[in-house]
Length: 300
Image (cartoon, rainbow, N blue to C red; front, side, top):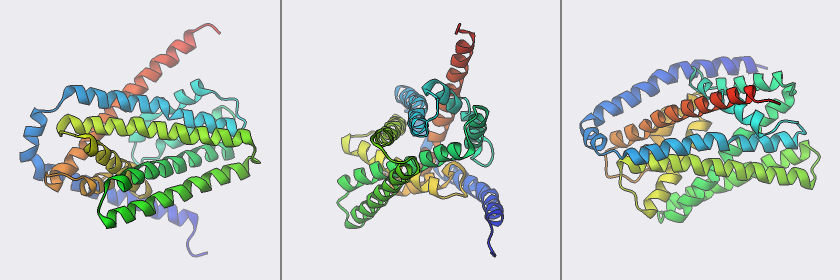
């Protein structure tokens, strides 16, 4: 076989190394081009909305593990929300290590120490990522389909919604087949999808609150911003050589957003959301650290 898994991993690693400086250069250039127009926006930033964005993102990090709980039940693992949420939240800082995969690696190692089999750990991580992608595209495409009167965008949204439905259906059928089906398994899969949707509601609310801190948003504009965020995240996710969707998320969002501001301003403003998520991730991690300390000291 002329193209092996090891070769693919090496090419992916090389693509990541080459892409990161390009993406950072693109964002730096956008910020430089937008510097003259950013000052008025920064002067009128709403601290209240920024705090709301921070709080919503923290909430999302504690909602996300509900999906993991559902998958653990499907796999027959005796792990509850307390263990699984702390495993996820306490490894949030690993997201920011070079490569963008180390939180998943750290979680995999934590599951191994809890004597969870490799196949079950991998099933959880893969199913979570597939659901995250499918649900984000489904919600984003549904919102865009409702909003847009432009035939091309309506058609693109319809195709995206159909693709997301197929991805979700494939995930559900794969899990049902792998675990032997049954009503209990199906209910847990529905709970996993619902939990993932709830995570995206909180995450999208965080981005919309952040956007409202700098720009005036009406009802329809909130829905558009929400759709743009979800679809832009999905675009960054599927580009494997872009860690955390760096550059891709901002570029796609900059083109999807209906803004009177130049593209450089929009891209830079979108990139600024990463500062909110970094601060919120470390805040969620600090909360998890404090809770784990309290739980260790609590009498059993």
